[in-house]
Image: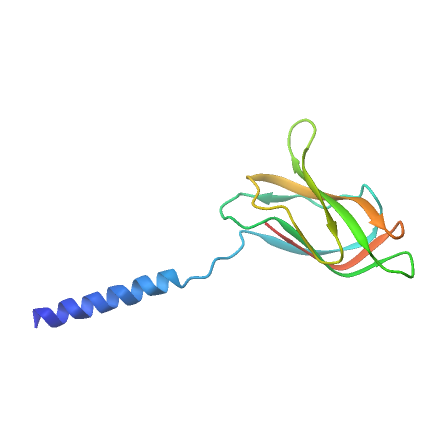
Amino acid sequence: MHANRRISGAIAGSLFLGLIGAVPAHAEGSRSTYISDWHVNNESKRWTDANRDSVSTSVQFSGCSTDTADGLNTAALTLYKDVFGPDENHGTRNNHCNTSSWGDKSAGDYYFTLVGISPGATLHVKKVAIRY
């Protein structure tokens, strides 16, 4: 009788640990927005990354167009950390209406700027997904 209880307890404990391990990892934060009539030097709204996970900070574009008939070839985006004094530049990535990633960032407030566009001078993006 005691052996059956021990076995039942061991099985229940194993199932519980299995369920804990099966919990999926989720990004700490994300937001969706769009871009309309952006030019070089326009910047996004800020977001706060508390760095409670190891998710890469990324910006995903879909549904891109410019003020030319050729559409978007490249939008150069620079990620900044908002700090006292000059903001910290965390690098520029070329976005081809896809995802640009900057890796796992330390806690802080971040934003991105449009530093280049080809071809054209005005950028439109139907969906922008920011993950951090």
